[in-house]
Image (cartoon, rainbow, N blue to C red; front, side, top):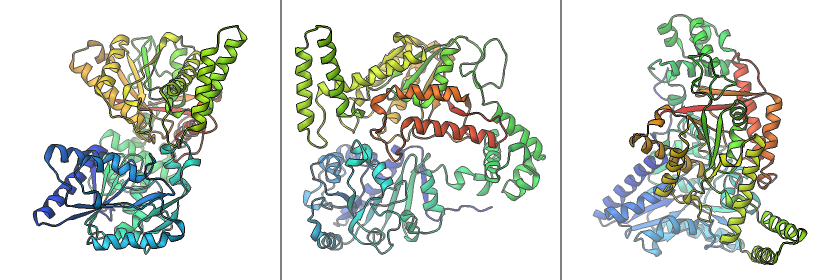
Length: 632
C-alpha cells in the first residue's frame, strides 16, 4: 500500500468551472505580484474547449475586480496551418473572442503563431517566435490542456522532448476530436504550428488543466512512466508543474478509482462493490469464484479483515449487481420487490425522456424507451434543442426540392417554395467557409430534424402529442459556440415539468459530447428540479430522475444502478429507429474523436455492458442499457 502513485501534484475540483476559477486566481495573483514590482507578467496561453471557463473568469475579474492586463505579455502555444486569422476556428479568433477583446491588454503584447506564414519560410518564423519569448524574459506561467492522446500544444505522440517551435502533422485522433469546430473531419487542417516540448519545459511554472472524459490519459500522464508516446507525461520532469482536473478527469487516478491501494479506506457498500468488481474484471473471474488469496494478493486484505469471509463478500456484491438488472424500467406492477431499481407503484407511470438533440432518446436509451411504452407507461419525449447546425447543406436543397415537386404534383402553387429553393441553392453555392446559415436555412434544418424525431416517436408507438419540441434559446446561436444556460431555458423546462408532473425523468448524463450541449441541457434540468422542489411542488417528491449515457460513453459498471437488457430482436429494432434519423447517417456531423456512426457506437457500448455483466457471472444478454439515479 502506498500513499500516492502520482508523480505530479494533482488538484481535483468538483467541476471545470471551479477548477478554472482556481487557475484564474493563480494567474491574477501572479499578475498583481509582478505589477507591484513594476514587472511584466509573461503568460503562455492555450486554446480549445479546456480554457473557455478560465478566460471567462479572467474577463469577469477584469470587469468586476479591476484586474488589469496592461503589464501582461502573452504567447499562444499553437495555431492551425494554413488558416486565416478571421476564420471562426482560428486560435487568433478564439483568443480575441474569448479574452483579448474584453480586457485591457496592449495588442502589441499579444503573440500567436501565424497560420499564414509562408510555408517555405516557416522555420525562420518559428525561430523568430522563440526569440520573442526569450526577449520577453521567458514564460512565467504556461497554461496547458491535454489531448485524448496525451498531446500538449500540438505536440503529438512521438514528439521529442527536445522539439522546438515547428510545423507538425496533426494526428488523426486530434483532427477527429477537433472536428466539432469544422462540421466534419475533412475540413480540419492537417497541419499546425506549435511550440515544442522543450519550449514548454522552459516555462518557470506550468498548470495543465483537464476536464471531462480525459481520465484515462490523465492517469497515464500523472502515474505512468515518462514517454514521448504520451507527451504530457514529460511534464513529470518539470520542477513546478500542477495538474488541475475535475472529478470526471480524475476518475482513473488510483486514489480515486482504487483508494484501498493508496491508504486507509472506509468500506461503504458502494466501495466494496467497486473493489470486488474491479478485482474480478482484472483477474478475469466471476464474482462468486474469487478466493481469499485473490483478496490478499490484490490489495484487499483490509476488507477481508473487516468483513471476515471472502465468500460472504462475494455473495453481497453478486446480489448488488444482480439486483440492478431489470426488464421493467418503469417498475414491475403488482409485486413487492424491495431491491428492484424502480418502484412498483404507481403503475402506469408518466415518464419524460429529455433528449438534448433530436436523436439522443433513441440512440442512448432506445430499448428502454420501447419497453416503457410497451409496458403501458405514458411516455413523453422532450427534445431540448433543434439540432439544426448538425445537418448538411445537401439535405436542405433535397427537402426543399421535394416540397417543390410535391406541390407541383398536386397542383399547388409552388412559386414561393421555388423561390426559397433558388435562394437556398444560391446561398449554399456561394457560402464561405465557416459562414453561418441564414435564419431560413436554419429553420429548414431544424424542421428536418423535427420530422425525423416525430417519425421515431411514431415508430416506437407514441402519438404526436407526446412529442415536445422545446427549442431552448441557449442553442439558437446559429454557430458552434452556444450560450450558457439562461433564465428562459429554465422557465421553459419548469413549465413543461409542471404541465406533465412526471413520476420518472430520464436525461442525458453523458457529458463527453464534444459540443457541450449535453452538459448545458443537464444543468438546465437540474436547476429546474431544484427550483420546483424549493417552490414546494408536491408531485416532485414522487419523481425519480435517471441519467443515461450511450452516444459518447457508457457508465462504469460499478456505478450502474439500473441495467435494462435487450434481446437481439430489440437491438435490431433500436437500430432501425436510429436509421430514421437520415440526416445523421453515414457522415456524422460534429463526430468528435469517434469515427463510427451513432448506431454503431450505441450497439458496441450496449454489448460491452452486457459482456461485462456476463464476465462477472450474470446472465449473458445481447445488450444492456445502463442508468444511474440522480438524487436531488
